[in-house]
Length: 499
Ligand SMILES: [Zn+2]
Image 1: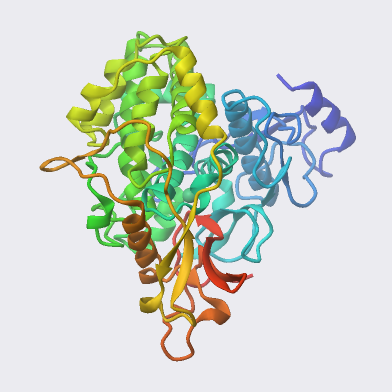
Image 2: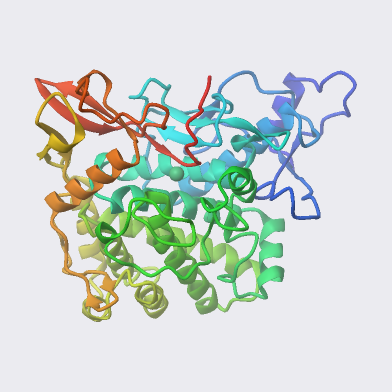
């Protein structure tokens, strides 16, 4: 049914000349537009025209909105509403889950730029790197066809997920440890998964395609098939064979500091998108367990699964301190949070099982997590929410060819509340020090060429990777060099972003 807003909007803006009369609905995709080499082509659905401001987490796509109408896929107008509908779905969903009063880190309204130039990419930024704050999407030509990352609900809901996490746990943005950005990427993918579950026709397909075993590989678990295809043409091993990343995977947690900074998609590396797959895989398994606990089988239980899974996830994020082994802290906090009302421990075994099977919680850790009274969980959430900014620490910059010998970073120096760790192949992994984690992640960033050193690079000793996408930059504050994050980039940096 059209919303009152969309009716009002459709009266205000008549349909394009020659087009069919508007009925207050627009056409959009259920989830990703799909890999163009895999038939049959997907069929758009129709939804009420999305109002961008009448949601708890408002957003604004730059430029004028096309007249409300059902447009053909492939048109500029269709792409606009494909993005607008996906964003509204995500904003409405998270708006009902996050603490009331939550606002974007960058202001009351999240700005969205649907085409910021040529790249196979998309990113969220606070606006410190020269791009305007908010979400940015791009386009590029592959095998004669132009692909727009902003057309994919998987990509769009992923990007808004970064914004949601930055709103509720801003410490993660700059925390200098591999598991902070890896969790950001995982949360963004989990946001895409949960948002897709808000589409009734897509829920029916998931139930049909998976036979009710929702952690099987499916259109749902395969994220960003179209962008994955576009990247695969030029870089066959950079993405999965059938999508950008598949939440249905068998990656097992290992200390990311022991991993190489890059690897083919079939292997785990310390690169945040790659390492994020461990947590996303565990979450998919946890959702499947929640669904079965609820009785499985039907649409209502799938809706409830998304609600309960998201509430537990947010409860875990709000209670977990930012430390190097952050995955295990979030997992343990989720298990504890689910001990309280309204869940009262009914998901205990499926949550523990999912995190133990992926090695995010060691067996010993899972055994030590016990229920805590609801009030205690509330006070823990409040304590973390009030936590001050992460401390800054000086790292040696000698190896990075900068003009000074040290630079400062934000240390993942939160205070651990639970002495849990992840598993390694040979048992429980040793907790890592925050300083060591910062040094390791910093080295990764420079090796991948993601740091814009600007005027602070030594004229002869620096290695600047001039055409690589920069997620971080070096700035000077009070005579000190500071390494700071600019963006979470989410596609594939092939070094030719153009305006
Ligand atoms: Zn991302």
